Image 1 (cartoon, one colour):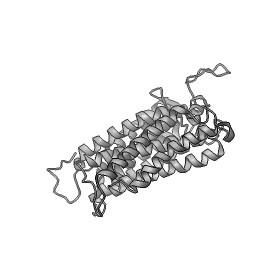
Image 2 (cartoon, one colour):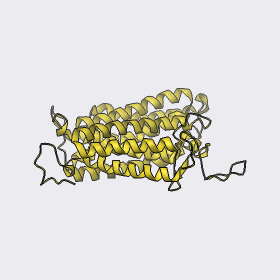
Image 3 (cartoon, chains in turn orange, purple):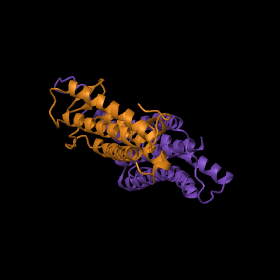
Image 4 (cartoon, chains in turn red, green):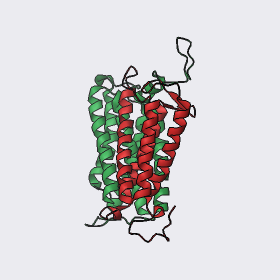
Length: 151
Length: 177
């Protein structure tokens, strides 16, 4: 991990950028969650609406695990790359999670809905919303000075 | 500190917006439209407050956040006439959203009274670690208020009792995972 003092390049160090920090931390956590998900959902179909539970709470199927892996990789790579990359990926993932969370309310209102190809349950929706708040809040509210700088 | 306070207030608007959208999902047609518009406006204000580094349209935000309470009161008074029941207009959820809206309204009122905003007047961004802790604390606080409220909405209840719930007895004898 680079430090603010040791960095002589133009791009801000990891520890000086909230977006890079949050992208790196969330990226690592999502990759870990994906790996745990693959371990617990061995017998679950790729898009089976009835998934397996992580920590006995969060429901996942194989597609959900792949999504976690891709999102985690994107966040981790962006976080380790530059402020503008981290800001962009945080914003996109945060907005996508927010939309997913809001869509979740409307999908949940119809329990017979057959479009639950990610095996989402209520704790999933709530976790996605919490992730969206932090990611979107950081993308929109932090690293303002980096908005016009070249990464 | 001012920047972190602004982020927290923006999160309060976001929380209120999410609860209003969740309420809208189970509300009668008229209130579905009203609460959806209200929720989307709160989400847009959240994004603008973070993006612009100051509170945007403070007078409108003050009126708009209090308007949420007026809409709720009017819906309760209208009652069965527009299809309102305790189930599709959950008091606890709307009380939580109203509490968040009151926080926004009070902040706007104080902000308007204390300082007329000058062009180019933006909050200075604190150091990364402090800002990040502020964002995490604000998100935790907002979700602590909003999540129980979301769980009380028809959408939340339907999700808990829907086909993906794992802690209920199913008629086939299947006991879940």
